[in-house]
Image 1: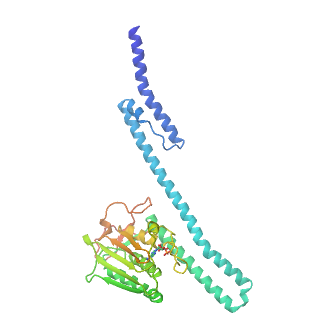
Image 2: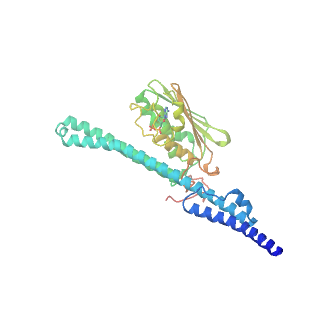
Image 3: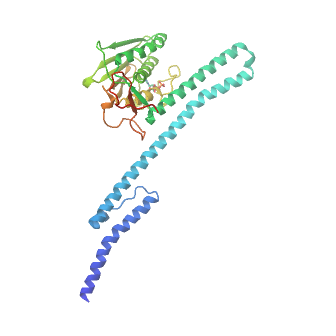
Length: 342
Ligand code: ADP
């Protein structure tokens, strides 16, 4: 009878050792299936079972951790898309509302007065141009974000790329009464880059520098080689500067600083977001330093060859990851990263 009693107790204890962790596993799985992503098997129960069961519980908890992190990432992405959509709608509403008003005025009273008609038609043209500009920028941003951009990497002289962007900005600087200077190294700076896109980065930075600098001020652009064959482009202005509290936000889409008043701010807060995306896919960095009333300096650092830089691209949210890169230079080694445009 004693032996039987001991056998029953031992058997019960052993059964409990197996069933308790299994019960916890079932409970946690059920909770997870019901959407409670934080549910895990308690540590004490993990250790209580046999080694196989403990291993299973550890694996279950690891899987639940990953699931929770993935869902959180998707949720953040969804929130960001929702905010972005709201911002886009808001940006589109302003020119559309203005166009509607002009249209109403033209069909009603002003239609017969040639002067008023010309004025409203001119204003409508400006609004339509703004809509077109917005659409183009949004398309560019979404392409950059989705990783669908095909970088046309060439081992060209970075000085030429910067020079042509500066030439384009010349008329705007003269109109505003701002001196625009280019300082560059004497020797060519050959780094693999997409000249058109890097040109756009410089255009956006120089455009801002001119816009936020008062007449009489200056904008200097410096192109220099850096360590390890990298290169830097600095855009230095003597403009209004940026509030320290605003600095972390200026690269956000649609963000416009408090000093970007109507007189200056014809932009939509997309210029820097695009610039950063382009620099990111070149695996470079973009930094800003600013002092209120003194000026602002943007520094872009580009690697000698983006294809050699390992690791994920900063700031990418896309699941596709790295952008496609194509080398269209005549000297490019055949077959290296060659892709046909999608
Ligand atoms: P926008 O098209 O409105 O200029 P950006 O994305 O290019 O948008 O810039 C975002 C904000 O960053 C601007 O509204 C402005 O407040 C600030 N900013 C950018 N560049 C400068 C600069 N050189 N000097 C002062 N403020 C700047």
